[in-house]
Image (cartoon, rainbow, N blue to C red; front, side, top):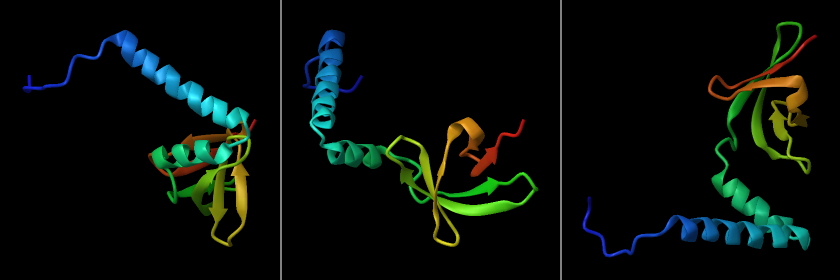
Length: 106
């Protein structure tokens, strides 16, 4: 174990710190300040500008890059022609490791 001068943080203290931060962020969002939340979210976001392929029903694909989330939390992608589309999880299967967004068909 490394020689550390930091005091041991108890579980209760750690959990209290987490909940205090959640309450602070929630209060900002409830007061209409979404920008603080979005800035924090995108600082931790892994998929910005990730290139993906959207598989279509006719075995064709659309190239796109991920640009973020919309106001409802759904994934926004930018198509090769510059169009921004929202991809909703109820109609798609996401495989980010393969860079695929595949529509579910009944």
